[in-house]
Image (cartoon, rainbow, N blue to C red):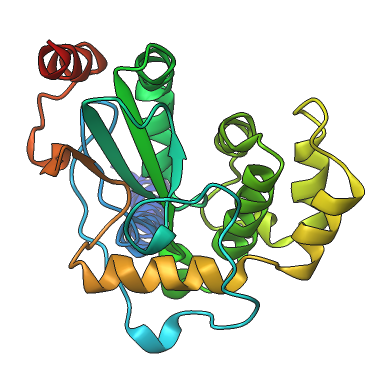
Length: 257
């Protein structure tokens, strides 16, 4: 083999080794980012792949600014939930959620139509609790701002519609887009009749910020570790990895008999 060929092969080997090292470094960085983002949510139910532990944060991380005034019609323990459905329903679905949480969006995308069907039929009452888990773990204020805006929509009698719009337009978990009240008001334009002067003032003034903070404290005090946490008649559905919309529907209908 000529000296020129040997030198060419050596250069090729060096380049290949450098490229492999570059790829290993990029992969390590990617894994670090994934792990850092994943710890804020627990992935559960059939709509979500895997389970990732989430740090619930400490009490000192809760935002205590703003009024603790509950939105109109709030119910559940200490009036910390937004109820959807009829009080006469025999089954109650308790949902602890964070509007910045991608696992919450996965749950919503998979189960939304079934929950709507059951609540509309009077077979299920849903109680939604908003928490600020991702704000606490990743920084920012999008969880709080979106939660307050959803409570303002409840004041206007349009919680369900706006709740769905927020998840349908959820930004990347690392993008604190919902921290912008203007963005939240723009999204409200997708709900007929929601954007009024009173709604805009409620969003901008953080009317229900303190109420959201109380909800997050209740979440922590309840020992919940991740979002979404979903309970059907007190039973944690996250423990059943075979859960599907059809199975949830059957459980509710069986309880309704």
